[in-house]
Image 1 (cartoon, rainbow, N blue to C red):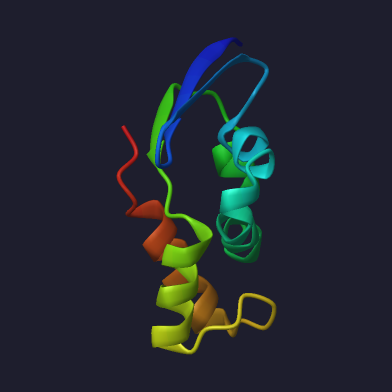
Image 2: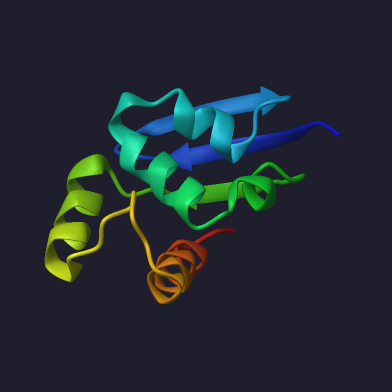
Length: 95
């Protein structure tokens, strides 16, 4: 199914046709931490589903500040930490 995806990430990146939230994030060098967090929270399938989505995506710098403040390591999350990251990502404004 075709859909329109718009990610607002310090500017607007529009993608259409087969692109998903994950495809657009993977294509952005400013959002590698978002991609790592989506993978760590096991949300790839969710964000690869049909849209439309509008995602206000934190940049790497914003994620780094969060990770430093919380002491989280996306490469080594406990079950509770994975749930926390998933909660953070799912509560980013998605419209």
